[in-house]
Length: 434
Image (cartoon, rainbow, N blue to C red; front, top):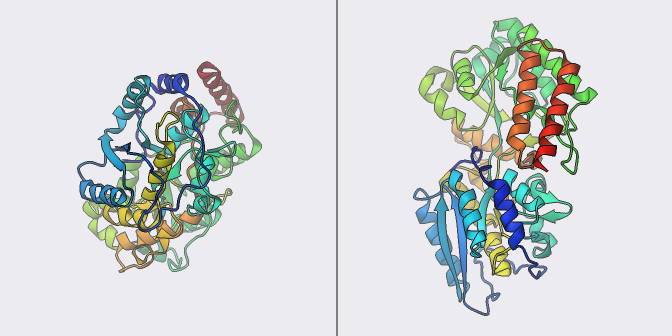
């Protein structure tokens, strides 16, 4: 189970075209029956078999899903669910093949990036025609709206994750800072990092030079209709200038540090902070047990956009599902508060349901770093959004932005000239893909 892997873009455009070639309208039924704790419904008046696809969840979660499906079928006479699980890199080919043969699955597990891509091409059911406003409001707004395009919702949010701020308590206190009152914004984090550097000699943090640095500061990568670059702005110049200056000061390490490098620097107490997901804990617990004991977790400070980036999995209904009404109902059942809470407890993920997050599992801490990170992540969901470029050529666009940041921050290239160059490259990528 992973929420951020490459490889899905293989044959994606072909998949879309095949989906569109086979597309036809499905009648809508506004207001899918409520599927609360029991999932009871009288929606099915005929025998229906739903084909449900997930990504890399078998065999780890077989017991959970077998029980979930059995409960659903018990409360929905005439409905049977066939669960199939595929590796991440194989699901695009499977989707292509099944749709081309006229055997579309009914409910499919996709991440936000590709749900948005398929939705924008008309290959997914518009769930807004089936869900009530009350049902839509069950999910955290930022995460739900991540796959709303043109007022149409193309996915139901399922499990998610957010980054938190890990702090080396020893270094923070040595710098004269109070870890009980952590920074709330990126600006405050920079000031903390500067004070740590001045008082201890350690840097504040290391970071990877990736495209998400733009939306964190409220700088869109593409325009609203995804037809052109939108990041070449004075705000982007200011953001990059600040990063360059912080690297010169030694407040932020002057390096394009991938995850393994970040673990190394935090483990060696070369930095005081780490911006990462809770899986980071497993690595420092093994590589630096003393540092692990001195580490605490707090909600991630927000940038100028006042948001936190999540990394979500969703459930979608392909446009060619032969059972759209029942498919939406089943997807809503899987993602209701009770079932999201249960899945999070066995999978160590976060739910996208507002009600689910009220469970003591997400609010209580036993004082361990793992529990602190879980609570901090949960507290971040009200400002979470899955910001994705949302076009088939997203990986090429992200790579272009990364190269531009590397040229400026690692090699000293001119900021404006480089942004102009990357803007042209991104626009060429978009035009070639259209």
